[in-house]
Image (tube, each protein chain N blue to C red):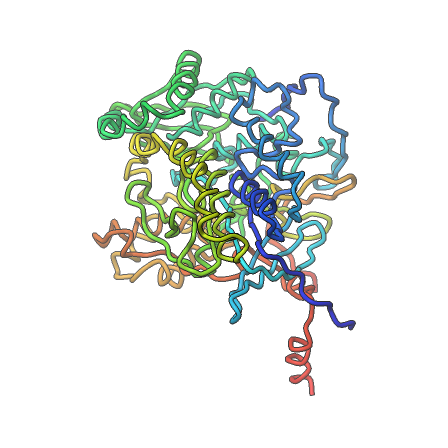
Length: 484
Length: 102
């Protein structure tokens, strides 16, 4: 075997090509950093601007102006000197003794693993939808509202027949509005936001009244309300299979003390979004529980700097603030990376950061109102009975609750008891629920219950892929030693 | 059920790409993920689970949930939502117990 050349390296590696990643990579390249951006998707945009450069939905009135703003990020990114590696999945980030990061990733088209050395890493891995574990949420025919929106953006694929949207949060109404623009019929929206919740949100209304969301949000909501029946105060939802089909056929829900059953073709679920923390956890950054958002957030400062040197997090992966905030957080992280690598001094950093901080503050205005208004009711976050909690290993709420009552000490021991969190999604769709169920049964705070210990590889990798890693003399002699 | 929207606004239609699903030909559009092509073809279940053998299909469409696993060109457990269709691609739904070739 031929000896590999020196490992490819860069000043800054940005992981994720959504608004935060695109803005960070563009800004860093302009500051003179040798920058690499790695993203899982085949094209830049992340989820919010998914398929921005290639969507078949070219009639701009359908997805709306906020979506098309993605082009303002894409065009400068395409002109900048960042090396862009698309369709590549980062599965390990190892901090070396000299402080550099050794990053392992697989290019998914050819299943080839690669290594890269980076002096600074910015995680821009964004958000995922909050787990919304209701009975039957694993049935084919039930997908997330985010998934339905990705189908629309990437392929112009939309539901037909009887379609019900259920849950809460801005994305649910945005999707309904986009469907209306596209002429897609929606049967109804089942709103799980508790009816009195606006009273809790009211103290935060001052920020909302001054926020850029107000005008847009009101217009969008009134358009949806005028066209789609909205059932308010929904307290329970159940997806039911057809006889012998194993696929969604019916929906049962409770609202105002009454239970109704409805034949449906699709159920689109949404209960807000939460930071995607698997990578930041595996690297070893500190995280804290957010009581306002009922989820974990990495501990970051105003620049996105984490508890680890030369590791920053930008965008919704550092706590949910939305897409416009994400791009400014991306630029702040790039400025911090440039300063911490000695390309600019801290005065230059702070000077350049000022407009982005101001824009971030404007974009974040009104978030508390939203967060409080759309906070998922405890009963929807903490399921009971046969409802599946871990989709991969098919572990139910009652199994987790029973183990917690028996004295299971936390999420990691729960893995050993029930295998929950040990399937291919690696806890992404059960971790928050398991933490909350243990907290519920043991009368503890989620922050004290903790979370799964996340280890590399953070996504499933085959042995064959690992075997394609470039060999070093040390790794070769380590194996040869045993062959003698 | 799902359908394709015509919202091209005059832009040229994407190229048609032909794949097979369990041996049957399926015409997709260039740029589709395998999962999107399955939805457009009315296929919402793509595998039976390894734990209890119940039907599952794509759920998150962004590479997080791993419920959309299919065989692609002989390689098992590929994420249908993260793989773009290619001319001649052979997609196999993962129905029934898996076999390990010996």
